[in-house]
Image (tube, rainbow, N blue to C red; front, side, top):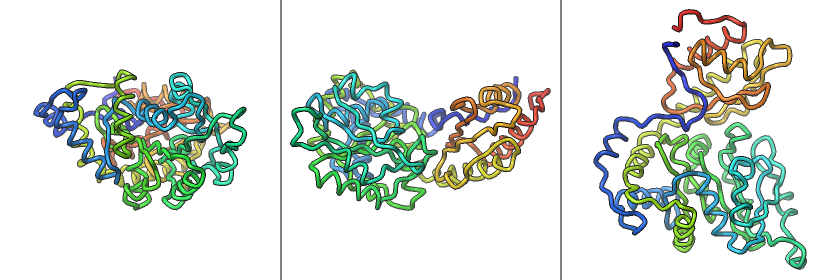
Length: 359
């Protein structure tokens, strides 16, 4: 057994801090399905305020948050949503908008920085005069930060432009802001300004923010009223949910200020990995807490083998993303010492050195 574990699989793997556990133990609770849980009310009120929207709704997961948001906007079956071909909603959420909501996805190519060309978005909007044969374009979805692009940030200027296109054509704009706080910190733009153009935003509390469970949707009062009903339909109504919300409140206050350090440590590791023969990192793309590592063709290893060796011999946990690609995600429980240890372990594992003593 290795003596040290450095878990870089995702920012979803964090453990609750002592302050979170204490808040959970002492949380004031009631039945949230009846709208009476005071801790949930405090979290929702705080998140709506932080993101500059009228209201908020706590939900069990980011997938449910996006599904509810899309279905509220696209309330007629056969509606169409424009979204990136490499977006989380399109790839990693089980096709829920189509299978459950009857919403048709119309994809636009994501650029390497996570954006979609504005002219391509506008070109994807259906001509309402052809409503007899086309689905009805109702919604545009953005993702910020963009996970599959390596945690790249969408600028406030870009988001505003997409918002202008949406308004011009009478559409709504939803932002999958699972890691929106990472984007806000990296861009040095207040989070409410970053999402100002959006009609709705989903925020994952269990990713960069480091809460144990849950996401929040924000939007107008009318939007959240409809979202609350859909949450119940989808089985997301929970009772004494304040136990989870209390931890999330602590996480927002404790961990958002730590995101800048997460980003700095990610860049430090990326720079170091790029110096190891057989590995390649495009360090210019490391803007937040995600790194993609490419294993070069002449290397003596594969993504699966390197992950296995690093876990078994050194306690470094990673996520393979194909035969020659790895994903690394930083979070507040990765220290500067962990970065140096991981670099040393990568160097040895790529060179085929086995750790015999587990230290």
